[in-house]
Length: 216
Ligand SMILES: *Cc1c(COP(=O)(O)O)cnc(C)c1O
Image 1 (cartoon, rainbow, N blue to C red):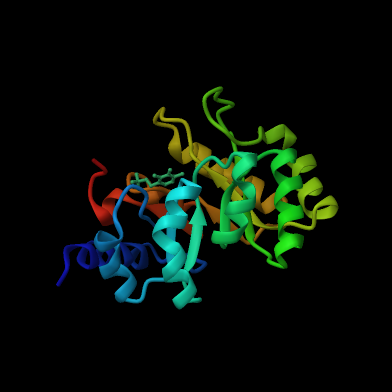
Image 2: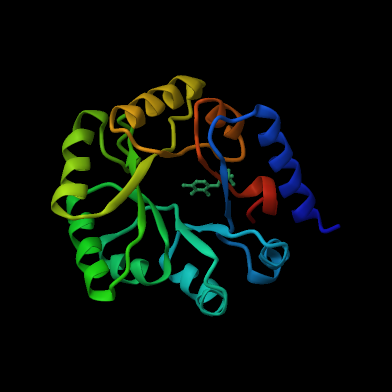
């Protein structure tokens, strides 16, 4: 069997062994990998894939998505507002909704295209300058803006925790914030920490290198 499929199935069985309360979706993050490397997992029937650049997503996934409308493409990286229009065309989920200007444009483009996406609001839980995301104290306001003023379908929160050995603590805080907004989905956990994320009720884990190997 193909190595990628083996790794993928190993992750799936690890997840099952955690006995998560809610179903967990694996977003296979295929950024930087060429389509021929990803193809075995598509052929295997997996439906959720993640990219972090709009242009790369277009060149890799346009044709496939046209011929297979059950594929779901996730934008996991920082989304610049000048790329938002294109993002609405190609993506089904955006994990990095984090400012009003972006919400404004996404909402407008959804109307223009007659398309609704699913969104995660990215939270900058460590208030790190170099990281995107809204700060926890701005979350209520921004969430209300997105759903009430902009009619965006926000399904959960997303986090990339600070790299400081307190990952579990950050995941717990995100789970609490998610509950405080009664959101159903929670996007957290990558190759190195998806176990901990799922133990803290993540429902979408974003896994790249553990499936596809190291990025060059
Ligand atoms: C690249 C990326 C991932 C996947 O990272 P791995 O460590 O390879 O699993 C997950 N989330 C985001 C936002 C990413 O940019």
